[in-house]
Structure formats: structure tokens, C-alpha cells
Amino acid sequence: MQTYEVGLTGLLFSFLLLLVPVLISHYLDLKLISSTVESVIRMVLQLVFAGIFLTFLFDLNNALLNILWVLVMVFVASHTVLKNAELKIRHLIPSMVASLALTNYALLLYFNSFIIDLNDLFEARYFIPIAGMMLGNSLRANVVAMDNFCTEIQRNENRYLFRLSMGAEKTEALIPYLRKSIRVALKPTIANMATIGIVFIPGMMTGQILAGASPMVAIEYQIAIMLAIYVTTMVNVLLGILVLMRRGFDEYGMFNKDMLRNV
Amino acid sequence: MEILSISKLSVIYDGRSVLSDFNLSVARGDKILIKGRSGIGKSTLFRIIMGFSVQDSGTISIEGVPVNAETVWDLRKRIAYVSQDTDIAHGKVKDLVDEIFSFKANKATLDRDELGQILSYLSLTHEILNKEYTRLSGGEKQRIVVLLVLLSGKDIFLLDEVTAELDSALKQKVVDIFLKNPKWTVISISHDREWENEHVKVIDFSEEN
Image 1 (cartoon, one colour):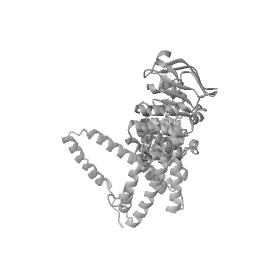
Image 2: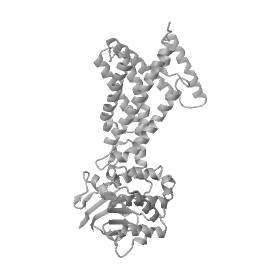
Image 3: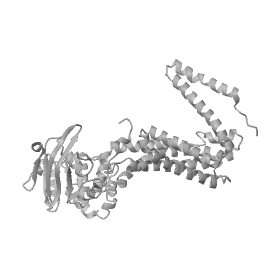
Image 4: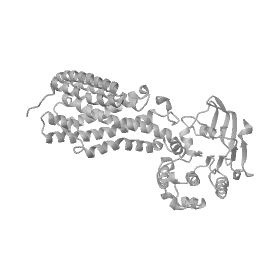
């Protein structure tokens, strides 16, 4: 099957489309033109960089380098999560990186060895994009969970203190908060799984179909990746909250407000 | 025998001295009423005993054990503390009871017969167990908190305005149940007259500071 590339002319036509949001923004005075332009420029630069860099990584296909690159991705993901959950980065990033790295490497190896049965488990063409799918898709849930946990523990501090005064260990008193944060964070992921294929055709599946794969191959990958994303999200979310439970409280068990930014 | 000893306790909160050089000695079985206008540091005293706040200077010991980050976890299992805020749960009352008595420290303490007796003593029925906690009235919430504390099997009680939202007959009943047991050590912060009784020692914070 022939695959059509976008090419330079195609890209020019894509950029031409930008006139639509720019004109709408102009006539309705939405004040979104400069941020749109800025975001588009960022996206283009980052993708050009990714294109060059990934070509380089794929050509080299060095296991150690691939592992290191995933670690960089984990670091950036942890940074983004903490920043968006309005937590102080320096205080939490080592434990955050450690826990995200643990889940993601474990899931990647499982995926590559049992699900797609690769000969080279660290093959760049699989290792890196799949890591990106799993990390990228669990980011939002992680932010929601950590943000929810910190908000709830402050808003309902009295409920926590009551449990401590009723003789609860710190973990026992925090379990209701942990439960709530995980549930809130995972709901959209669960809803997303239930609508996939009908409401929207996910990017990865579209990509494979456009690249010439049959829809059946594409759905096999999609099912496998969705399940892997779900597992990674749940475990990442859980570990993120456990990091907060461990590092976010002083030795008396009181919530450490110093951990929050803007306080 | 001295059960609680507070010496030279000082607390500064928001640049203002809340407690300064406060001393108190409580023997086992003592019943103490703490009075005084609000904002004077009564609740802060309880929070510090429980390790929810830390004093600026001075020491607190429970049966000779100083309250600090290591000891506070065990002390919390011995002391029953009720704060003024009765917003302690959402979900069914029954689930709250089950949760509290699922803690390792409380596993063996729940006595269902006693639960029934205390419910009826507090003019409540078993039906309340199936209600949503957040939908209860202030007085009902307060009685549920008292119920949990009484069931916890502890013998040192720090009660912060536990009778404030009850009608006078119920206030008297709650006061009676806490005062009647000679082994229980009870310190109560309250504005209610029902606590003023010949066996209760009164400490007025307005005079102390």
C-alpha cells in the first residue's frame, strides 16, 4: 500500500489553516492570537527537534542511550506534574522521578517482551514512543490526583486530625484521601476507554492506518497500548500519592504546607 | 498519681502570645473545666497536647512521657480528643463507625451492645447509623462524636465544647457520663453551666493570663 507524505507544500497548507482561528480571534477580540502563535512556534520547534533527535536515536539504536532518554522523559514528566499540581519541585522531584521511572521501565519491558514479543527489548523505535504514550497519557491523571490530595487534606484537615486522635496510624488516617484522589484522577481515563473507537479514533491508531497498516493491526496495538496506559496511570497515580504521604507530612503527621507553592 | 503535667508552656501565634508560662498538673481521675473567652488559647492547649501544634517553649508530659514527635503517636492512642469542629466524615454514620474501629489500635474495642446502650442513652436510635453523616444536625453530629469517643475505650479525655449544640437535658446527660467514672481523667473546655459541679475543678483562662 502506498503512503502519502505531507511534504513541504502540505505543511504550508496546514499553516494556512491557522488563518481561521486567527481571524475568529481577531473579529471576536478573543486576545488569543499571540498565545496561539507562540504555542504553534513552540510546537513546531519541539517537534523539529524531536524529529531530528529521534532519527538520531533510531539510527544509533543503542540500548543504554534509549534507557537514558526515557529517564529524561520521566524527569520532564515529573517536573510537569509537580509544577501543575503547584508543588515545590525541589522537595519532591527525586522521589517522583524514582517512582515514575520504576513503573514506566517495568511496564515498557513487559510490553516489549510479552505483548509485542520484540527481539531487542530496548529497540528505540518501540521503547521510546511507547514510553511517550504511557507517560504522556498518565500526566493529567497524576496532576489531578496530587492536586486533589493536597486540596482535600487542607480543606478537611479536621477529618484527618479526628482519625489521628482516634488512634489511627498516619496511613490509616490518610487512606480515605488516597482513595478519593485516585478515583477522581482515574475517572476520565476509564470514561475514555469506554468511548474509544466510536467517539474518536486515537492518534496512534490513525497514525498506523495512515502509515499503511491494516485497521486490524492498528486496533491490536491500540488495545494493548490502552491497557498499558491504564495500568501505568493507576500505578503512577498511586505512587505519586504515596510520595506525598511520605514526604508531605512532618514527624508529627501534620501536613507540610511548605511543600506547596504560592503559600 | 500525676497523669498530665504541663510546665512553663508558651505559645506565640501570629506574633501574639497565646499562652505564656502556663503550668498545670492533673492527677488520674481529675475532672477539670477550662473556661475563658474565645481566642485565649484553650483549644491551642489541646492541640499541643495531641501534637497537632508545637509549643514555642515549655514541656508537656503524659504519665511522665514527654510529648514529642516519637511519643505522640502512642499517646494519641491513649487520649481521646474531640475538637470543636464536628465535620469529621462524609458517607454513612455506620461506615464512619466501622472505619474508626478498623484501625489497628481500636480493633478489639468495639462492643456492639455498648454501642446500642450509648445510642439510647443519648436519645438516638439505630436508624441514625444508616444516615449520611453530613446531613445530621449539629446536635446529632456532636452525639455521634461523643459516642465514638466513649466506645474507644480510652481513659483520658480532652473535650472541646462537646456539649455546645445539645439541649440542656442532653448536655446534662453527656456531662454525667464523663464525670461519673472515677478512673477517667477529663478536661473539658466549655461555656456550659452543666459542667460546673462540686467535683469539677475550674480553671479560668481569663484570670490566668
